[in-house]
Length: 342
Image (tube, rainbow, N blue to C red):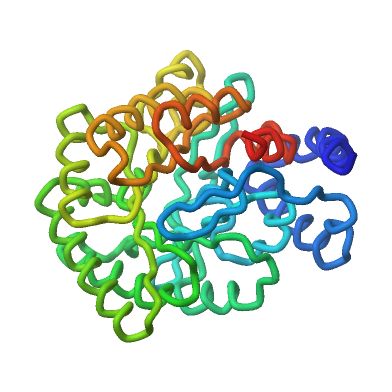
């Protein structure tokens, strides 16, 4: 009954939100969730988290569905979002220093295709403020902390930014996600090339081990990759992930391709495409990864999930967890309940 009431309310407010600029609607939604949680309304309306618990990366997840990075970039709405029934929430991407991101407008809905194009550019408050934001949370699901490099840090020194993110997040978040696949920070995807990736992963694993020995707490590392890798590249990164003992892979980020929307004017906007048009491309990468790593490496499926059937497809392709973002914009909280029940 609570889930039905929450869905009804979302269907009422969605037309209002969709009349706003996409980024303004984004901020209004987060503000509304924060108000609902602080006022106690969220506790009255939201259902208990459903689904079957699962253990991944040595962590106990209440269910298989999580919120992908990019929605709560600051870690300032964890309690409000957690009330929707997510088993895990990934905040960020967080960079060592605060940065405003790319100029506006930088977020575009493609309503007729259930899609979004964004070129946000890692707008975030910086590591220190993000850590302060997450400390006061009440929600007790699994928290992921997505890290990246600052826009003005050259790739030759990118490892320093990622190490700073890992050091900051370890002990405060349950796992750390390494974002090397956003298309909206110039040159970032070059870190997916074999030599650069090997050096980055080795440095992160060494620091992960050092931090674990010092604190007694092991913080798993997941790596988020792009859907635009060709099969040979997928095979090479899979081998690296296994060799360097990465704890999980998130497949995938947004795509630079415009298949499924290329007949629309909005497709000319620069940035990463998410939502329904990326589903097949993302799932294909997921299947390729699974064929390479088998059961040796947990996979998290994200990209184009708008219905329970889409989530089931990711699980059948090899994912042990899934994440939502764009589907949540179009479907609302009902999608969380649908996918958590799988």
